[in-house]
Length: 229
Image (cartoon, rainbow, N blue to C red; front, side, top):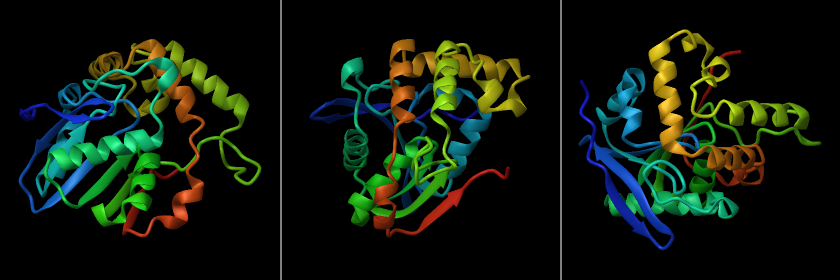
């Protein structure tokens, strides 16, 4: 069984950010999860724990909960963090961990903030890995492959209604949808990450993210990983 690292708190001007440090490799790596997270409960899913342990096997791995989610301080629903404020959370955590330069490994909606961070603080970033990430999700006049607004609204309704049940696995991870233990873990992971109201507000916010204008400013070595089809 993989041991869960000790959870610590880094203090920023906006509140307390929960974070963990594990591994003693020669490089510092920060894993930036999707918009939701819970630094302790994420270790309870064996496959995800193995993924994190593999990162920590060659690095000093830094994990954290963005403000408003998980074990970090909550935020008012009418004052959701901006990408720039979540970016400050990363800076606060890596400073607290004593890291000068880090590689960012970012998943899904965490990728947008990681791209913005890499463009803003290139001297703090040694490399960027984007896992199933996006610069924007919605369709725009100059971005026809995005999700049409009507579909985005339907996705929002479906995700919001199924929050905390694990039913979102049917769409987000259909290959594991028949696994009752995974569904149970995901349901609790969602409940521990954010309340239904906070989740609905943040999902709607994520669907509006657009960082395409900063992509040209990303100058650090970057690996983009996504599944086929």
